[in-house]
Length: 113
Length: 110
Image (tube, rainbow over all chains, first blue to last red; front, side, top):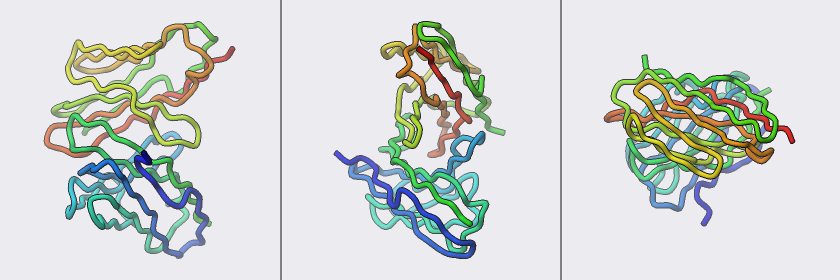
């Protein structure tokens, strides 16, 4: 039972480069999320998808785009990476909203030089 | 503004020394308060959900409680393996968002 799978685990980019972080869940969850985690700031929501076919901005969406490819997959794209995007990125999913708990992937550590 | 604040930022305990972590919140329409444990280099792992004031939940040495303004995570007789960062998060009415606190880093020394 894989749960939430994120790739890659580590990535180093140069300023201006682009990349896509991949996330897939095998729990048939409707909602999926992208968070970034920075020291002392906790987890901040970048984008979320309440259900297949919908996406919404979170707290810190600037510089990112997302695609809910299907019910299982939710990708995060950095079009032109900046040093301020150096962070640990977590994908998460849950069955619905409100009372439901989140299941997290193991994270992607991204450094932008 | 919706906000979640955790204290202390860091806590060092001796093995067996009980203590409490605090999570205070100001949100409109609380639907659930969640506690997560995060080990270094890993994603957060779910511990508890609390739905209404007065509710309590327990798991091994951990006990979570909820009031209308805050939640406590009580750790009784902790062991070194309880060392981790503990995160709380709140879910709100008609929203798919969760707001996380910045966490409490717990270190339990043998």
